[in-house]
Length: 445
Image 1 (tube, rainbow, N blue to C red):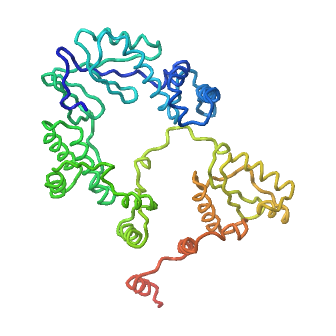
Image 2 (image 1 turned 90 degrees about the vertical axis):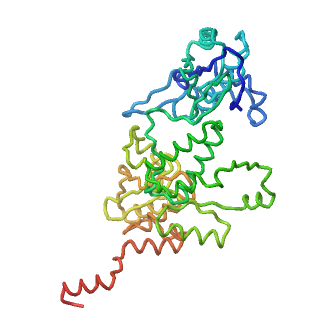
Image 3 (image 1 turned 90 degrees about the horizontal axis):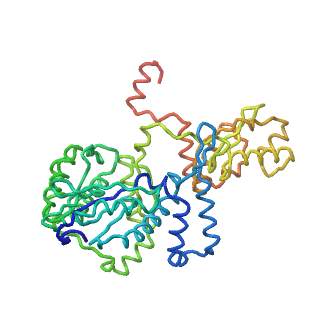
């Protein structure tokens, strides 16, 4: 929309940014913003307005976090990390802009917003007035303003917006502190993922950049890829081939009904990326079944760093597979639960006390008169998806040397899993060379 946009004379580019938006959204602002948009909201919501507002109020007043065993409640604003905060911030920003724009003595030729970042064009003489109006809307929501530099340009998200003789032109932008790190060519990803990454970068450059800046941005991308060890021949083929020079113009209308139907019937699954193996598995599924296999990387950036957040206490964890040990023998019990661990343990205590025979743990404790260590529960795994959690539970039960669980607890485990788990406990097959060396060292066949 903005490329080749003609600005009025004596207008300059400015960007507005809110200082700590999430932490400064007041309850009153949220209520007013939601009420103003209720006609749109109720079309997608079966809850009555009064009840809806009560839920919003409850969520805003009960944002908390735990640190070193102490609970802290948020007294102002929306909680960082809450799924609700980004949604409410969008409503508040829309509401703020709709209220502030009519107060200006001019009509902005354009205004674009992304969460708390706003870019627009204003008369050169109205900078202080604009900032005063926006900062005067609410004492907690305060803006900072950035003006265009000596090149008559201003950064906004991943673009740099230029004003060339009052004509707007966009260029691809990265901050000066950017490390230019991307998916490294030697990283543990499939080749197709790396190719798709380059293609998407090219598509984005062509979508963002004004024709005057496309060649420069492609050259910049080429240097970034070289720094990340991509082979020159691969870069040249993807960046400068005639196919990629053509502008992609695929719309939803160009997709046939048959293709749309096929897309709906495709089932997706994900498997770890293992070199020389994953690709062969994908081919088996793609050729015989209507299943699209997506590879996922097991070596993520998160594995490199320690967890900085205070861990959730064990008794308050949910969606886990847990293990309980018997204090009078070597037997162990494995279970899974979606509720709080402390609630699940309370249920086990009740089953043992009442001799409830629905639970293998209760049967073991009462028939053998053994004491169960319910004070020291071990978390074996965590999984939100119920089906995956039950499979993990069966795998952990199957992996126990002396399980208390009933045999029926693992009856639904696939024979494939059972076979693979049995391989873990058997010695690896020795090659003929290794067998011969072992024989020579021991002196016996």
